[in-house]
Length: 326
Image (tube, rainbow, N blue to C red):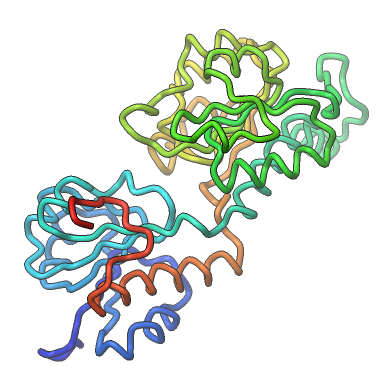
């Protein structure tokens, strides 16, 4: 239990093997790390965080009502890149820093995007099932296409997009198209900066690496899917809400596009009757693109270091909800 004069750092999601890293980083600041898995329950989160000096969160919603109940919180630090589960405006109005960890896991997520793309392109999952079922050799209906010489489209060109581009160049893609309206022109050296409709129309492989915001919600919709080539492969390791799932299901079911590799869903986990689960031309994983033993240690360390900065009276290095004078 935290003593009356000690700082309380509350972790509202479980999931890591231990929190020794956080304890080690924060112990010199007379801070106790209290792990209170709230399982996304808003009522439990309000109680758990009411007297916290800092909050560490993975997936639980930190909404305006929860933030209003925080009496002394100075920072909400997210284990991860996206902060769509935190009400940034409410935290800003209360003078609570929100920080993320944008510089972890780029190799892991880009590896996973590549693995999904390759699994769809080479039909490794359906071939595995066929061999286990006693079948042999690709059926005439299961076409495959060469990767070298084709066009890669990246929606979002941050660290992960750059890492995937590097890996796909090694496989011989001929062109790389990028849609990222947040970047300066100078950031597109070696790639082609294009609008999203043109990217969807021209790309053979489309990989999503954008944050989920009001502007990017369902940015891949029925109109843009209709622009895609029938041989196109769509990969999403970013956020499920970037895709209009009903439109994707329809396109995959009708073979309007070749296939998809999906690590993230609009609502997670998907229910057992989710229509994507019944389709043979989609490869699915469980929001694990970020994971490796190395990335977990890096993530826990960097999130705890952001908390430590604020408890020392400094602003966080990756301050998301900046206000005037910050």
